[in-house]
Image (cartoon, rainbow, N blue to C red; front, top):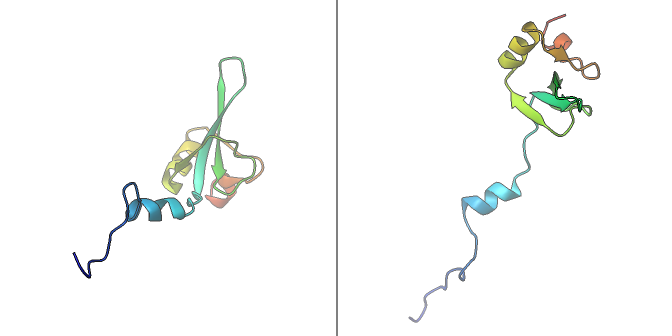
Length: 89
């Protein structure tokens, strides 16, 4: 067909998928990390999302959930001290 603009070739990725991959992941405001001690138990802590001591397994949570976890007895990270930021001492 004369004057037709060829589309992307087979296997070309265009659209939302490419834009989604190009966007950096958002750092969560709060998170819970669980660290195994190697003896069958886990120790969970509440962290700020930008804490360097969060480990590899930070599970993002809302501020309300972080407050609830702290009120329920979960430990606060000693490095980032989310309990002071969330108004719980």
